[in-house]
Image (tube, rainbow, N blue to C red):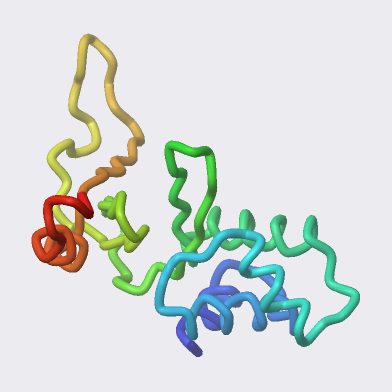
Length: 145
C-alpha cells in the first residue's frame, strides 16, 4: 500500500487521511470498485465524507496514474489500483462476474497512423468471459442455461 501513497507524493499530491482511506479500500478489495463502494468504505471511518469528495479524489488519482477506470456498457464506472506499474496497458472485463484483468500487450503503439489520424493516446477495454464463469457455465444443466 505504501507504493501508492508514495505515488501521491511523487505527483505533488497531499497524503490526506481520506486519500489513504480510498487507497486502503481499493488495496484490500483486490478488485475494481464502483465509486459508491469506495464511498461506503471511506464513510465507515469518516462519517462526514461526501460522495463528491470521494469521486473527485478518485478522478485525481486516475489522472496521475495511481488508479485505472473501467467504464462498463451499462455506464457504471469502476476504479482499481494500478498494481502492475506498467505505464501503458489495457483491460479485459468478464461480462459474467465483472472480474477485471490487466493486459500488458498493446497492439497499437503510439505514433501509428490510423485512417490518416496520428494516434497520440488510446485505451482498449475488452469484454469476455473469465475462466471461472466459463467453468460454471459448463457445469450447468441445459435447463439452467
